[in-house]
Length: 164
Length: 164
DNA sequence: CGTCTACTGGTCAGATTGTCCAGTGAACGA
DNA sequence: TCGTTCACTGGACAATCTGACCAGTAGACG
Image 1: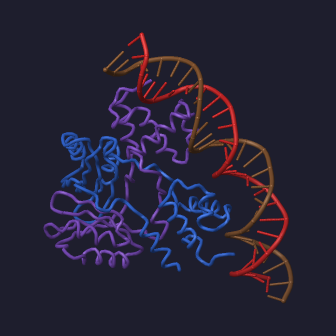
Image 2: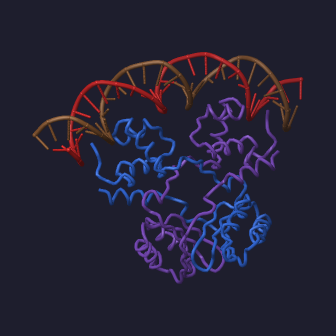
Image 3: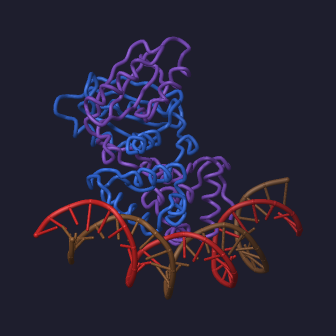
C-alpha cells in the first residue's frame, strides 16, 4: 500500500511511531511493530527513513543536570555588536556551562541557556558569558522552575490528529 | 573496589558512561562495557543506579521539529499577574505548540519556547499564548538559528576532568 | 495493463539481553 | 588485626532481539 503524502512529509504511521518512541524510548523494533500492529520490517524501514530524512536524529541520553550537581539554570539575552553573531556564538560554545544558544530577532540578539553548580558558580559562568568579546549588553534571569519540561509529544499527537 | 565519593555524586566511570552514551546513544550495554573496559555487569549496574538516582532519565527520541513541518521556533517572555504562575503554566501546557516553559526571575516571569509551521501559524500560536488569562505583558522573539543546539557533552567532560 | 513501491509474514544465523553465580580485593568497623 | 560488606570481574545460561534476507500481495501510477 503506497501512501499519498509527499516524501518529505510525515505519515500517520511515522507519527505514531515517533509518539510511541517518545513514550517508551527503550522499545526495540520488534516491540514497536507489535504495538503498532505492523510488520517488523515496516517499522525497521520507517525508522531508517526517518533517520535518513533527519526527522529522527537519534536517542540521546536524557541527563538530569541537577542530579549531576548542576542544579542552577539561567538564561541570558545578549545584545552584540553588529555582524559578530558567528564570532560570539563560537566563543559561547567554548564555555562548558553554556548548554544552548539561539540567535533571535527582537531586542536581544542571542538567547543563552547556561547551568551552574551554585550561586557563586553561576556568577562565574555569567561573568564568562558577559565577558565574551563583542557582547554589548546582557540581561540574565535565573530559572526557578520548569513547569513544562522540553516535550514533543503534544505536537506529534496534533500531527496524527490532523492526519486522520 | 569501592569508590570514595558520596552516593549521590557522579563517579568518573558514571561520567564516562554518560559521555559515551551522549556520543553514541544506540550503544548497547555490552558494547559500552567493551569501550569502557569494564565488565558488562558493571555497566548494567551503573546504568540502573543512574536511572534510580534520576541522573539518567532515559533515551527519548530526538525529533527534528523542522523535519516534521514545524520549522519556526519562537521565544516569549511573559509577565503575569501576581500569584498566577501555576495557573498560567497549566494553560500554556495545554497548547500543543508550547514545547517548554520556565519560571524565571527578572523582568519576565515565564520563558516560553514554542514552534509553528509558518509565519501565519506562528501568529496563531503567539496569539494563543498571549491570550492566556492572567498574562499581562509579553515580548516575543523568533529564533533565526541555533548556533549551539542543546548539549550536555562539555559539562560531562568537565566533570570527568575535575574528577581526575 | 504492466510497473513500481510498500507492506506482510516468514526464515535464518548471530548478537545481545536479563539473570544468575563464585571469586577477588579494597574499605570499613569492631 | 580480623571479619564483613560492597563493587567489580569473568563466566555461564536461556530467551530474545537484530539485521538480512525472501516470496507474495496490493495499491498507485503511467
